[in-house]
Length: 598
Image (cartoon, rainbow, N blue to C red):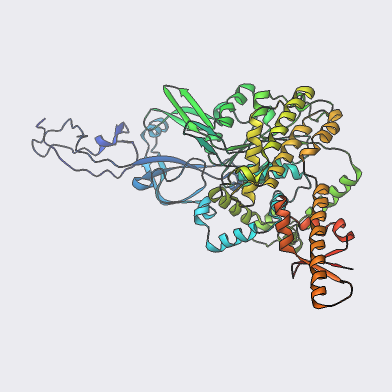
């Protein structure tokens, strides 16, 4: 009444409401108000002076247990955490964090009134937040990690090693593993004059029969990707995948809550049972898969959220089994707009082949024999020696496997530091143009998946991802060949069985086969040997010597340089081939010399 200003009152309580002794719900400012005015001894009412008050940042989040660490038969527990001052916005939704703080409680008047006895609400007042992914993030890699990563990149077989190291406990399916590797590494997003953005994430659809390890591959990708969100088609609605609006209990205002695609921003979103989703829910991710934004206009909120993530989806055919006499579009309940948004379509068929079945059964038996129970791993028992050698040593198909922890760091490093450029002289542009023309023509004649301009962008994206796997600064011809091979495999496997062989024959000219490469390399090597023989003959004449030349030697580095001029970057396979040995050549790798005896 006398307008006397008293204070300041420091309010440490981080709750928005409290209550008096009578249990009535009151505001925090009323609870901390003085009993009487020091100037005129009046008992109020008192008003808070908002202009002279000092405010601080305040954020409330819900911390939830990681699904993999929950005891059997329990649902994930949640706990409210309060961030103050500089801790606000230090963690984003979907991240795995470790929080250090003080366990506090506050008196909950509403629950007290309902239950008839005092109820206290508990929360954690955070002091420090540590992100789990920081340990493997590119910024926090140690010097030894960087050295190990760069040492891996120097290996000429690093592409094969990465593909074999993805889900090594699953036999075969190399084209699916290559597609997963490209999705995990990603390409380079492009922004044309800040007006038109071209996405850099590779979307993959895996369609196949039951028992072909689709979900296992998705689970492996979730464990390997630096940031991943996993959901299933039946358990995910349109709101759960994109964004929903709900009322904040604290401020009573409408707020936005991001779905799976928003939480997976700059990461990977994995959707299992993609065909089981409702059509309305599936159309909601059209925009997210191409423009990589999610537009929301609900409850007076009109905004756009970022969803820059790769989508890896797994689906089952209609009726459970894939019918080879029909095209892919007839085998799955997905519309053309959604099929076109996938860069790579992988069809997995469970075909009866006695030789392949025998290999598969022996591989599965060996995997089970060399594994140890999960309970023993939890108690800290080390891996059995045979299993360790399978994972970290000899590998599958005489290719050394990369440990999952190192592969995760390698992917982080490549995504953060590698930006492969598409230069004009490093790959054949006419080849891509003629491939696109023939793909359009064949897709019109034979049906299957409709080919659009998006597929040219897909070829570029996958070539960049392949170059990123090798930590290269530019896209080479072999990157483009790998991308074209994956694209043609996607297109041909989506056709009817009756036309597949014809298509493989007609598109064979776009695939640089190993046989053509062997003939070209043999010709280069013979030419080099001929020049070496002429040089040796001239030197013998100068010395006045007579006699036949018994041994000719050519430097391996010089041979690799000549092959590189013909855009052949790997001669290791050629040096191990039968054609190389039958021609009488031997390779001494320690001296890096190719020799031929007469």
